[in-house]
Image (tube, rainbow, N blue to C red):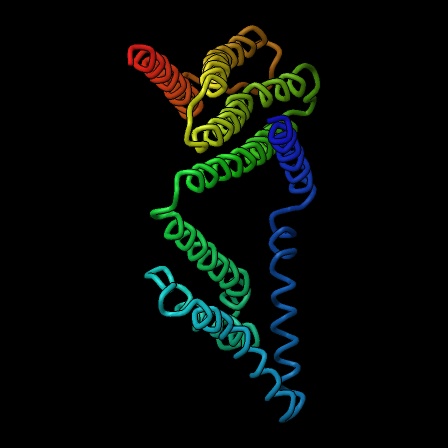
Length: 312
């Protein structure tokens, strides 16, 4: 459990650093950072193709090998292991071929499309690969034993918790930076309490999302216990601790949301920017409440099982 919580802390820190790095780069610079390497690949293929017959042959060989990699993987899987999701591998081959071809021949796309296509094509290929991997994993879990399903569910929750911690920290820090930039742009003297309060509000608004990440970690621990096949006293005690933690998380989510509004209301005369909210973070509440109810149901089931065993 402690290792997973440290993992969440690391994910949140990475999110903060990513937001800081994103603030130092303009949108145009960030686009160029991702797009320029792909343009360099296209220029390299074009230069190789124009270097002569042997260079042109080598360029085509590189394109065919890279675009044919999904087909080689499809052959390696074999007929028995194939499923409907493997159609994506067959579709990836022509997509990769077209992507590499137009990287090397951007003039055939037009000026605007030639600047957008490299990164757009790369993202499309990556999304197809990710979709195939997810569908393949899901089919592999179909009919799997309980222990394997529980392990996969725990790993999924841990991964979602890490992603949640990263995205919440990144979104919170980027939001505070954007609000402060707006305040600085619209006011000649942006000092005072505005920046400290913006930072405090950023932390308060990010807290429900971070609590959801922690809730997912508790869920992964519970999944590992349930995957053991037996629900003993230790499992019941873990359910009690997780239920109490989820209840605390739900209470903290509501309290922090209200406190953020009260803080702005109390300092409204001193602030150059305010953002009041009349909604509650329903996803955070639902995640905490759902896991709380699950733990209570498991506890009740364990008690009933003990009663039945004692009667028998």
